[in-house]
Image (cartoon, rainbow, N blue to C red; front, side, top):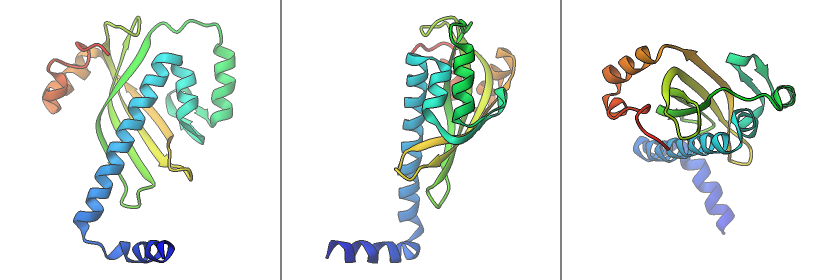
Length: 175
């Protein structure tokens, strides 16, 4: 009986009112933002490169370092082993959305760097991540890139476009 009801619900899903599907998209967007927060926390605790590898799809592309795929990221991690990273990177999404299909989404926001995980942090760029929902339901990113800017340019952008993020500002807050 449950299988029949499930099949009926799947068959009728395209006929659902838009507001019901919109609610589902909101749930998926919240899930995506939560996944990105977990990604950030993992990178903070284990290092940026291991964080990337943990949250990237097998065929992901990291534009700023020209890394294509998890195997390439693994090789880069091994090559960088023992090298100290000069700064800790953290990021904060300003926007997120998910396709109507529920299998693709994106986040973009401000990236910051600081000497330690406690900061102080200074904005240095805007990033975008494209996410794909995997067969197991988890989100993994398939594209990651950042535009490197001056801290002043990022802060001006935030003040003008996202005043709620600029006051007190992501660079003034500590995690």
